[in-house]
Amino acid sequence: MTEISAPGNLATYAIALAADVTPARHGSDSDLGTGRFILLYDPEEPEEWGGPFRVVCFAQAPLETDIGLDPFLADVAWAWLVDALEARGAQYTAASGTATKIISSGFGELAQQGDGAQIELRASWSPLGSDLAAHVAGWGDLLCMLAGLPPAGDAISIHSVRRASRG
Image (cartoon, rainbow, N blue to C red):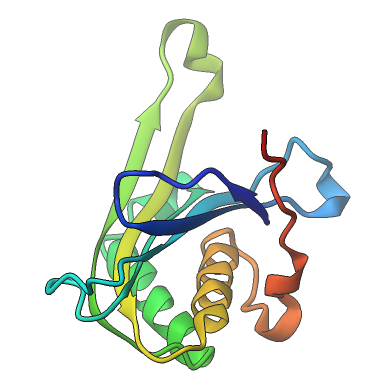
């Protein structure tokens, strides 16, 4: 997990994190999933947020093509987000999002890649209370689940964040 530059036009203050699921046994070029987590803060508490904070996140993982064709995949991806936040005790309101299933076939120079699939979840919600770490941990758990890893429990820690160099 690494801090990245946050978008400057969404709120008065923001922090953004990026994470990739890359098991050490496969090496650095074997990403099983990727995601972004942005925490926005606006002291004026926009009415549609229902509070001063808003999370905007993204998670994506490659799939086997037959799993990508499952008609319930999008519902399952959303349920995993809700379950991950609940398991971490993250309280929130005003949740919204989309789950997108992507099925692709390679042609021409890409024909040898064959068929492929991905799941992509984009979501936002307004955290309640002061335990913002629970929201980051829940998102990390979601990313691991989308990548095919079992729920991480306490294995994902906000303390593993590396600060991006500023300059």
